[in-house]
Length: 499
Image (cartoon, rainbow, N blue to C red; front, side, top):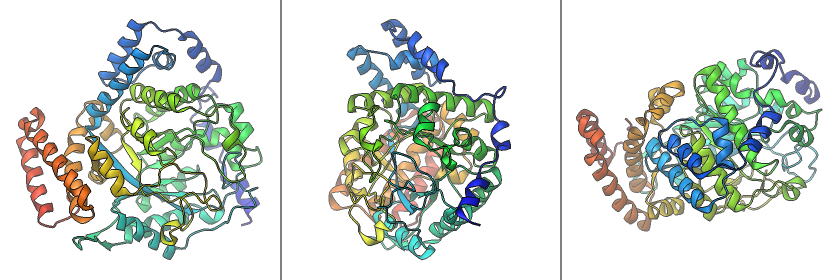
């Protein structure tokens, strides 16, 4: 099939209309703008009541979220920042999950004005990885110590769902020997960032062993969306993209991930829209997104908007949007990406983020070929943090956070509405803490530099002491005993043990 014919075949209107409410989508620009205007000057007592609601691990209403977005008082922002971190610790404890992205293809039929992959960028060096190359890329990522990967693709017939499924299976098939202990290791969870597709293709991804399916709307503001995504492209269909995660849920993928590219339109509008997206997924499927991401625009080759957007988000506003998202939607994981510099990542983590990437390379084939991270001729955007996984783990330990490589929930069936129920009752975080210690123990033994191991040993003793003293585990002695047995097994050299 020719590319032009393939483009015409992608969108299924019947797989959009079934999710509409009286023919309308869940994003209404006038409603959102009206709520932001109506809540423009919230008083302190109301803001503090909203903070308290979030601390009770309850999703905020749109009016409440709009009020937080309009806070001007620096003292209230300090209270909100502190509450955001407390919410995160209640739901997920103090662990930070690491992952690595693998860019498999930059072939793309779209022409997004902010992206280096866009079809009109003649300077982009186009490439799609073979399965042997995917395998070699995965080997490099494993040698860093990662256990989670997210595979990224441009939208193109050569990287359609069958190619995606092959890459997923290939990544899972790779095994390596850990550099210090020689223990056999592999990738335990493969997530996917890919273009929207029909329900039947979602089932293909599910059968291939996908973890989380991630699609970012880029901007929820429809007039802006249409201005930056040409109408004659697949991505030009706003509703096809907006309901991609609804189709994923119907196709059996119960962990989905939403996000917006901040800087394309007004950041307050995008935060409100992410809340509305969450609420509509919950309304139709009983469960919201597994994670929320909020990357900012960074420079991309031959993509003028990536540097000239009037809506670029300042560092101060970036911190605010992270805080409000954490308070507004307490349950999903929150991902801060390598687009941010190390200081911005730290600020986001101190405001409730739960996941980040490390040792990231975004060029096609860049891990095995050791390409410079900032080369734009083979990259979708510019990154801000090029530090290794070990350096990131060291920094997290200094901040008091334990690095986690846990994939237990996905493999034990704690996904979808099951995990959301546990998150809402602050139970899943207890398992997060146990599995963080188990997987951190693995990392310290298999990969850690001497400096990281020294810091890690102190941190892991602290975590174990907290576990033993916690009332939840004192009441659940069987669970505590299982943890101690599993920890000893890992110390003795076993791997991939989880609770």
